[in-house]
Image (cartoon, rainbow, N blue to C red):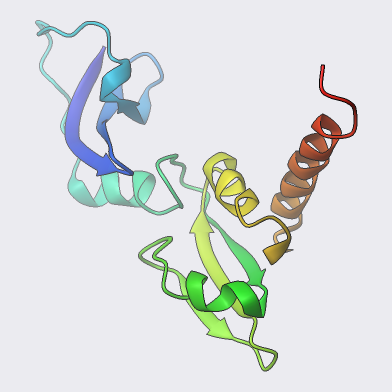
Length: 153
């Protein structure tokens, strides 16, 4: 059971931000994954917009959390001009290095979606921090290399 708060359109998908009664917290639900809906006798819980924004809108992507960290990503000069024009987050910061590289700082709370987006740049990006994010990207890349280290079955 949930108390719906608002609808969010993100990357061509619709999500419902809602208070989840079983988890006792705010969550985002993909509308296309909802199998059944109907009214409840209980009155819905109302959450102020500023609380929704603080918990669900602070980090990168659709995944939420109150603990926000900052990813520091350095892109090669070859990729810099493209990435510098991209909007990753409303609070992102970017700067060009003397060598033409581009450093992007992005707030995030859950790294799952951010890791996938970082990986699409392959060798054109390096995670400078935090260490945990760097290790997650490194592990994902090693797993990808492992998939290509043997003959096709």
